[in-house]
Image (cartoon, rainbow, N blue to C red; front, side, top):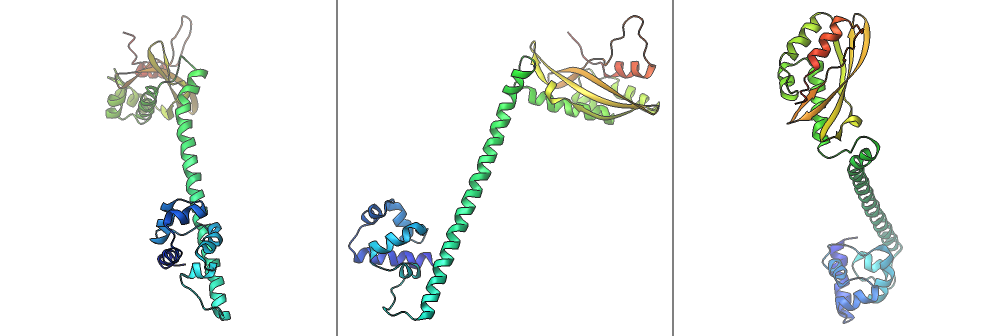
Amino acid sequence: MDNLKTGAFIKSCRKEKKMTQKELADRLHVTDRAVSKWERGLSAPDIALLEPLASALGVTIVELLSGERMAPKVQTTELNAAARTVLDYSERQLEKTEKALAKKAVLWILCACFLLVLAVPTLNGWIRGDGFTWQCIPAYLCAQKAARAIETGEAEAIRTYIGNSEGMASALAALGDDGMEIRNAKANFWQTRLDDGFLWLEVDLLVRYDGLQYQFVCKGTYREGKVELMSIISPSVGQTYPDWILELSDALGTYNPG
């Protein structure tokens, strides 16, 4: 169906019936703006409206779709062409409907994801700590970058993302030369929380040394755009640790309570 041709045909037939766009629209239970769009070829009538529209205009559905009047006795080939026109029109309308539904589905999924993101802080606040505020987002992202800097030992990244980090890069480099390897360092999203006015976080470290793997949890806080970390161990009287663990703990301990 040619929307422009059919639109002009609808307009011509409407005027023959001495109907206004509003009167035709009222008979079809649509708006006069819809009728105006049909007549200008900007859109086509819904397939469910074809029969009542054809009846209102005093034409057949085939004439409506073809955009012109047909002789009383139509040849078989013309009928077949008209049938094909109806089928093509139905297929196009179905395709448009499917696309519209797909767009709506995508929109609903995006909205659901957005609402889920909004719900995460509230849910986390109910489950852990005193609450998860939007300030925790930059804290977590900075902690991720700090964890990456610790893993790679890059001095500039350590200075950028970790506060009070003087000497950390050289200490980690010395431990690396001694055979220590930090793997899979990452911030723990679910432990990033607001508590006692501080943004607390955790960085998990998988460390390999002398053929063995060790899992450490390094707690810390986020202040003034940087992460400050606590020592990974606090030796008590009578406890002993390998020297390399004590050195790693001292290297990572940048937290200043003051």
